[in-house]
Image (cartoon, rainbow, N blue to C red; front, side):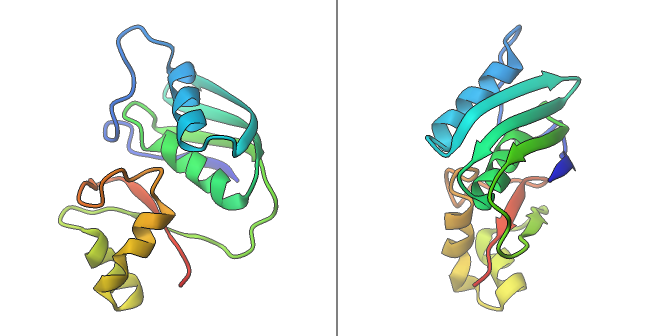
Length: 143
């Protein structure tokens, strides 16, 4: 998929002082996408996370990129993962101040009550549907 830019100063706080950032990202992806990426390897240098491995689906590949990119300190993700081809292009959305999942659902589909579909498509990235933050990137699934 290529190179993706993220806001490096926001996101989940994963990195400890003096830790191995690549190892921390790899642990997170292996935990949240358990068994879905074979041969996962992560390199991290100067704010860029490079991901390699074989994903079980294109959706897993997208989720891996979003999980890595929505970490504080990661400003770019170099996607070198492989996957089956995409069935339908995915729409990505960057959360703005004042957004909620219901507001995003209303804007994309005209129905705020469909917010659980966004949550389900991003459950690896969003742990609590009431806790999204400006700058976070989400997948907007097809209905």
